Image (cartoon, rainbow, N blue to C red):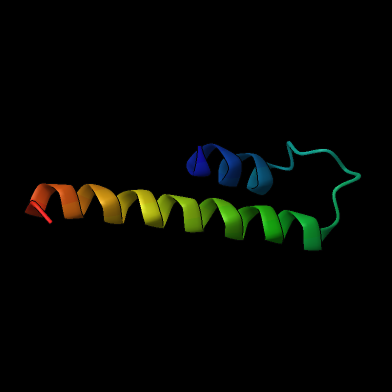
Length: 48
Protein backbone atom coordinates (compact mmCIF):
# COMPACT_ATOMS: atom_id res chain seq x y z
CA UNK A 1 0.00 0.00 0.00
CA UNK A 2 2.83 2.37 0.78
CA UNK A 3 4.33 1.84 -2.66
CA UNK A 4 0.97 2.55 -4.28
CA UNK A 5 0.58 5.74 -2.25
CA UNK A 6 4.08 6.94 -3.13
CA UNK A 7 3.45 6.22 -6.81
CA UNK A 8 0.20 8.18 -6.74
CA UNK A 9 1.78 11.16 -4.97
CA UNK A 10 4.76 11.29 -7.33
CA UNK A 11 2.54 11.08 -10.41
CA UNK A 12 0.13 13.72 -9.14
CA UNK A 13 -2.77 11.30 -8.92
CA UNK A 14 -3.98 12.47 -5.51
CA UNK A 15 -6.65 15.10 -5.00
CA UNK A 16 -5.42 18.62 -5.55
CA UNK A 17 -7.12 19.69 -2.34
CA UNK A 18 -4.56 17.78 -0.25
CA UNK A 19 -1.88 20.11 1.01
CA UNK A 20 1.78 19.17 1.06
CA UNK A 21 1.59 18.91 4.83
CA UNK A 22 -1.25 16.38 4.71
CA UNK A 23 0.47 14.40 1.98
CA UNK A 24 3.67 14.27 4.04
CA UNK A 25 1.76 13.17 7.15
CA UNK A 26 0.05 10.35 5.28
CA UNK A 27 3.37 9.27 3.79
CA UNK A 28 5.04 9.23 7.22
CA UNK A 29 2.24 7.17 8.74
CA UNK A 30 2.35 4.70 5.86
CA UNK A 31 6.12 4.35 6.16
CA UNK A 32 5.87 3.79 9.91
CA UNK A 33 3.22 1.11 9.45
CA UNK A 34 5.34 -0.62 6.83
CA UNK A 35 8.40 -0.51 9.10
CA UNK A 36 6.52 -2.04 12.03
CA UNK A 37 5.12 -4.77 9.80
CA UNK A 38 8.55 -5.56 8.36
CA UNK A 39 10.00 -5.65 11.87
CA UNK A 40 7.34 -8.09 13.04
CA UNK A 41 7.97 -10.37 10.07
CA UNK A 42 11.70 -10.29 10.86
CA UNK A 43 11.03 -11.07 14.53
CA UNK A 44 8.78 -13.99 13.58
CA UNK A 45 11.40 -15.28 11.19
CA UNK A 46 13.99 -15.23 13.98
CA UNK A 47 11.56 -16.87 16.38
CA UNK A 48 11.42 -13.96 18.82
